[in-house]
Image (cartoon, rainbow, N blue to C red; front, side):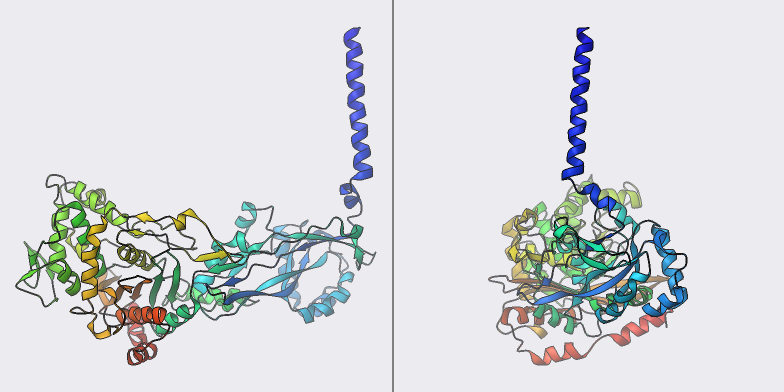
Length: 622
């Protein structure tokens, strides 16, 4: 009896709780009131303004302008709707109406999706007056990107409509018809730039016309505009570097070695981000994708992989010093190249027949010197060549090669730095030796790097053994970012004491080496030319194409402020195109002016279009 009494008390208690909860929901909660009146209440999703983008000096690069979009819920359409009248109102053909409606149905019959995007303010004014006559249709106001510049699409990026994959990944935010960053910082900083959506509730009359806000706006959720970002890019320098790429393909990367801030990132051919805005954007994008001659959407600064050629010799020497197989007094006599057995690597340094040391070898780019160093590196452990290659590989990778740099850029490539295990797999254990892979010594062979990795290497040399992860955003809402990935130095596996000899040799490039013809009279620069061999395979034939022109540089030597890598595809010798371009960019950044106007005019007004046309004919594109 006592247990039954307790049961009745417990049952009564639960009943009271339910009654109180029902009372609260009906009297104090408007959630169900909204549901009851949803046929007379319009829910307007407020798309927030996307954050603006500035350069490091607060020059505005990307802003917003407003457009309207027409959305549809297919299930609500009236069977007796006057489709011809509606098409005339919108200014579209009847087939476009059915095409857009089917696209909406394929997404959902019950959820709103974009029916007609990019409606101007003027056109929308005439549409809005009569929209009440067409059930199932509604409108949304959204901001559209307004790029204030006509280049650097590889940096800024552009927006595109969300895919089903995007919606599934973040269904709480995105719905069909929304836009998302497709490239550049628009993509890598999407969540920072996009803001948070809001909701407004409006009361409609029986004709569907808005007659006022619902419940004095108490249920509205305010949209939060996106955060502004300021790039590390110096727009004046970026613009200048782009001009220097007239009729040239390739990449330019300039970084501040003191903090890893990217000052310039030029991928040529250069794209205008405004091509990716507006109703015809997909046609333009499709045209760019189909351009398999120039590959204009391919970011050559972060995605293209090139043999680094002679600039890589600097790491060959540093690895040799660190591994103890050579020292700073080691010399080799060059007899017009490296010769051992059947292996030959020609040398055109002009310093033949007498001992060459580290600084001279760097200055004149002696192939024999670096081949000899590399041979000693690989043979450090005579009975275990794999171990020697692996040790060398780890040293090289400590400079940022062979790995993603884990920066804030939207694209990137690892490149290739082979290991001993790689060669065991390729040739078989004990079936290869130092001569098999000797081309690595001069930056050829299997080695592939990206221009940004090459520029990062220059930073590590300028800093004598460490670098900061290259990054492209400096401030968020005009407040400096504090991310340990960018503010903490990464140290290489090479001791600091060895770098001075490399730097002295790089400075001599402008005194006795290949940089004499474009030397600055008042800025101490340290550089290294490179001429990368370039082969393609056409119909089972390996064909040699014009070499790539490469140059790396940092300046001033006494207080490095800028580190640069330049790669000009099919440009020939490094001293012809890449070297002058790198030195002009350094002068422009340090002095804010260029005195070598004759050199500047030559680079600004001449290019390689005839070379590219001949290559296109060879490949069968023209």
